[in-house]
Image 1 (cartoon, one colour):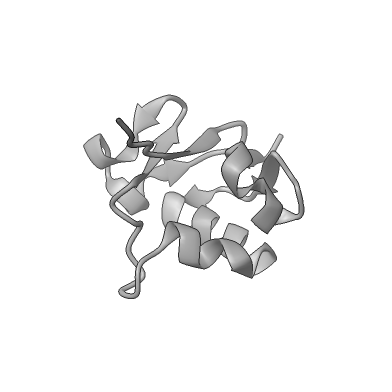
Image 2 (tube, rainbow, N blue to C red):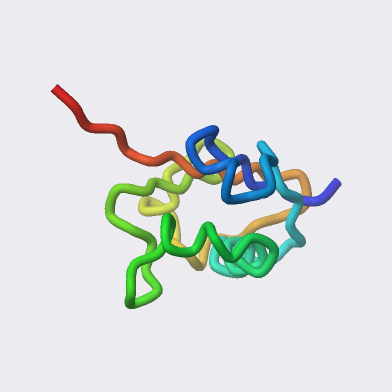
Amino acid sequence: MPAKIEIPSALQRFAGNNGAVEVPEGNVKQAMDNLIDQYADLKEHLFDDQGMIRSFVNIYLNDEDIRYEKNLDTEVKNGDVIQIVPSIAGG
């Protein structure tokens, strides 16, 4: 079973209305690149002009924040689940 990226409902319209996309093994960077290759409209919502993940977007691999692992170099294996979690602010 390939790894998958879960796409939050707020971004699904930029991903063909898909809630999840399968990606091959590799690392988080490769998985995100694969996602952007499939759905280019997601790029501006996930990455800044320098190609870094936007500060208000959190990425989890199997419920672990990748910032506390190897960030974008965190290994992704078959069966893993990557979650994109945009921060929400309000008051």
